[in-house]
Every structure is written in C-alpha cells, then in structure tokens.
Amino acid sequence: MPHYQVHIDEERLDGQTEPRIIKGLTEAVVGVFGEFFRPLVAVDVFGVPGGRRGVGGVVATENAPSVTLTMREGAFRHPDHPQATERLIAGITDAVAAVYGESVRPRIGVRLVGVPAGRSGVGGEVA
Image (cartoon, rainbow, N blue to C red; front, side, top):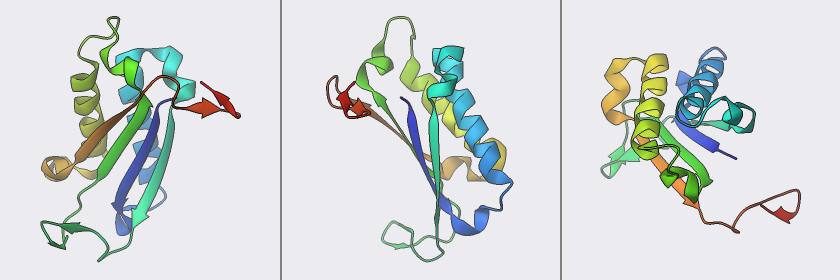
C-alpha cells in the first residue's frame, strides 16, 4: 500500500488545503501506477507548529513541505512502470506546488522509501 506522510507548517493547514494535498498526492501515484492503485493510497498530513522545524541548523522561517512515500520496493523498479522514481518525485512536487504555490517548489523535500518483500504486513499477516 502506498503510504504518504506529509509534514507541513501548521499555519498552512486551513481545512481546505488538506483535501487538495490528499487528492494531488493520490493522483501522483495513480499517474504512475494506474487507477488500480487509487483505493490503496493512504495520506497522513501532519502540521508542524512554528519554531519546530529547522533547516541548516536554524529555525526555518519559510514553508518547506516534507513528503515521504513508503511502498513496496519492487514498485520503484517494476518493468511495467518505467522511470517510476523520477515520475513520482515530479508528480509529488507538482501536487504540493499546486496547493502552496510555485514559490515553495525549491523547498519541497520528497523521499521515496522502499520496503523489501516480506517486511510489511496487513491485518497481522506478512504482505
């Protein structure tokens, strides 16, 4: 299951941006892997209170969204989905910039985490 964790400045969350981020990030996965993946995509949005994010050893003063997508490792290099890594990073960045504006694009951090086969589970069973 593709699972996102999004960390963003708390004051940037207003009840209207969250659905847009969730939809955009879901579309990023669907754009790479297809419609079959839509019901599998999970997105958690975490607000980071002001003064609790640092960049370069100092408290950050500009919005710097951090997005982590965790999914099975094999998906990133599956032959049916060429350039999945590049396409996901571009799609994720585009989705966040669409909500928060182009000025935030250079500060959007994206991390793709691959979980090896046999190292995840659902409902108490290894998946």
